[in-house]
Image (cartoon, rainbow, N blue to C red; front, side, top):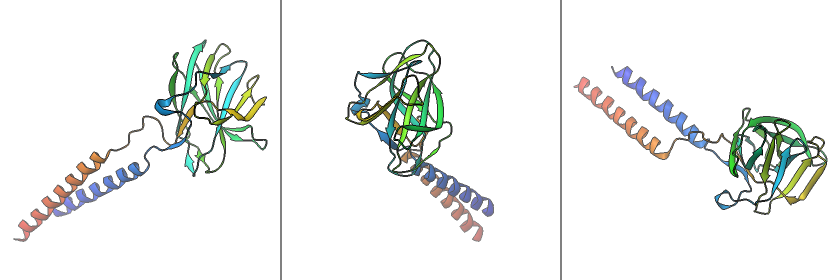
Amino acid sequence: MLNGQFGLLKAFAFCLVMLLCARMAEAGVIYNNLGPGDSHQTGFGLVNSAQNVAAPFTPSTDTEFGSAEIAFRHVSGTNTYFLELMETALDGRPGALIESIPFTAETSPSITAVNSLLTPALTGGVQYWLGIRHGAPDTLGNWFINDQGFLGVAQGIPPGPPWTTFSLSSDSNAFRVNDTAVGAVIPEPSTFALLAIGGLALAGYGWRRQQRRAA
């Protein structure tokens, strides 16, 4: 019986360590140019069969690309887009494709969350580009501009590469980049409190049983 109780205690300790690790991996914002309440300008960059748009971001530390939240609107046509994570080329423009993620968007201006499928590694201090490409010849969408003064934009006309328009002095499109998927369940502090109480109760029960058997 005592060995069984110690086994339960070991299992509890293992679960607690796993939850602590999950808590340490809590979602973090890598980059954000959205304003208070996710505000942005009413101006936008077009995403259609004639052009695509990209904006730069630089993580401060080594991390992973978990998701992006973009200020976007689907206007007409086929509601299919591709969010593209890209390296930066030697000339500063969007470069090699790292990941392309399909998504759909609301017809009213909203913050659209797009979760990574590959969660590629990102290097701190290195610039990357986030772009949006149309999914069908009739697709038309708007990627809104940030209202916080963040700069940098590239456009492909027709859709790049090559990127025909490139400027680090023009307002960027509005988005946020996270190191985990949007909607991922992160244990709350109350969860750890309940586990601790349960662990103490289990340990106390085992100690009392041992004392009784010794008597």
